[in-house]
Amino acid sequence: MSGAEEQDLYGNVPLRISQQVPLWLNSLEVLNITSTASKAEIKKAYHKAALTSHPDKVPEDQREEADIQFKTISRAYEILSDDDTRALYDQHGMAAFEKGGADGFPGGGAPDLDDILAQMFGGGMRNMGGMPGMGGGMPGARRRGKGKDEVQQYEVTLEELYKGKTTRFASTKSVVCEHCKGSGGKEKAKAKPCDSCKGRGSTTRLRPVGPGLVTQETVPCSTCSGRGTFFADKDKCKKCKGARTVKQKKILELYIPRGSREGEKIVLAGEADQDPDDAEAGDIVFELVEEPHEAFHRAGADLQAELNISLSEALTGFSRVVLTHLDGRGIQLHVNQPQGKVLRPDQVLKIPGEGMPLKRSDAKGDLYLAINIKFPEDGWLNDQAAVDRVQAVLPPPEPIQRKPGETPDMVDDVDFEIVESLEGFGAGSGDPRGGGDWQDEDEEGAAGAQCAQQ
View (spheres, helix red, strand yellow):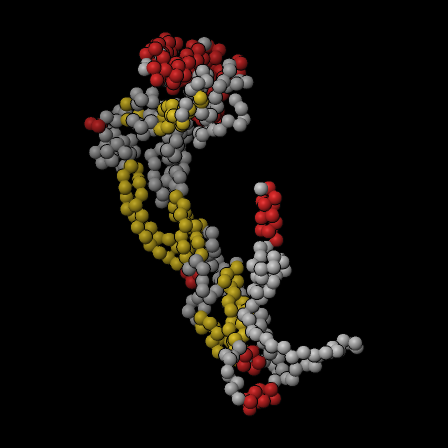
């Protein structure tokens, strides 16, 4: 088998019907027998299967597919009827007869999914999460464990994470039927082995995947819902109708501790759907997703927000409520600047102990306020007298210090315009140092490489 051959979702390689090579299936399933079948039963099953699948017994347009099936049946009988090859099959499954496998049997396809899992876990796979589960091919042989968890995301606001939250909600889940104890049948009623899958809980079938292509797939048995056994209608439990579980509504409580973080999981133990084949039910798991906040930005236990102040406040200080915290409290600051000291843009005020609370503690992180100075609107100095008064209060501009020889020989008066940003700087030039329409270096390099390839 070439390594370049495309595999399907089950790891099987589609087989071209024109290639006269048997498609490797689980030999017991090919002959529709159990693992305890005697040689006489194997021979009888072989004659029955060969008679119905012989190429001469089907219409001409189905002969190629029938020929493949007939060869598969013949190979299954050849393996199971011989003591030595049967021992290899019982120990390793069909993987022993793949190309390069034990006893030199030539294989034309990939190992069956059931055989791979059988080698890993022992026995066949049957009744596990909707796929053939673990066990030795007998109903109920799977080791009982914990059921599957139900995981879902739960959005919370930063206020809820700061204060903590408790919420109640209604949950409907499957629980084991108390009337039949999860058997699905009436008291003293006996389940019948499924004839469709011979008690294995799964069947293997051929499925067309394209013109001239077929593949094999192992699927849960539709007759017994993958259990290997079933109850006749008259023997089914009256309460669950043979489903083994019933729906139950329950009020659950979800508690989110104060200080919880994005990505943390809140577990409601044992509140997922129950399954009679599991020793215990799985959990409902809520993964916290923090909603963006319009004022605060969080990092760990610290919070950050912008502090908008006026030019006058930056120069002279202030005393006022600067923001409303996540718990509704007003945060007031008294900023009395020492004489001559001013607040500048991009400076930060750190307020210890006003960040997010720490879980299982009375401590809190810190609050960082990034200063943003709001300058007056145009026109606030509406006459020359006002301009003169401001200039008299503000420090004069510092003289330009020039080195000897740096005094310009000529001075020009030029016009100017005020723009909002450097976006137009170098725009359209293709120069990466510009501030306009240009790609960053990585994108430009990738685009150039792509053009070079074309």
